[in-house]
Length: 83
Image (cartoon, rainbow, N blue to C red; front, top):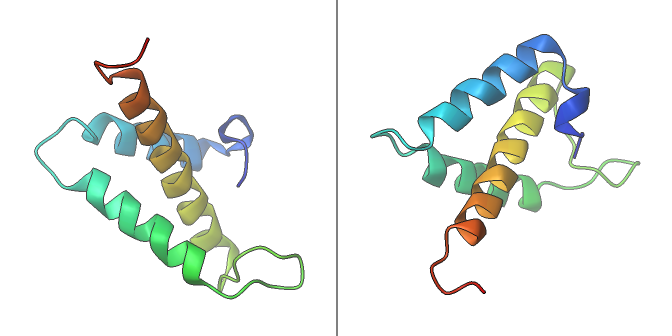
């Protein structure tokens, strides 16, 4: 996964919108989980990474995976039982 600090401006904007929507009334969190599961099922290319049909799709999926990682970290941080 690409480091979010390396995202281009369009990816940064998309990530910002997705993260802002995590607390909204939509099912963004569930959709991110589904995307993550789908990516895990893709066959790898010669570099061992999931094979996508084009760079635009790869860029969008990288944003979704970054948002999913953010969501997971946030959930851990919000657990009431963590010490």
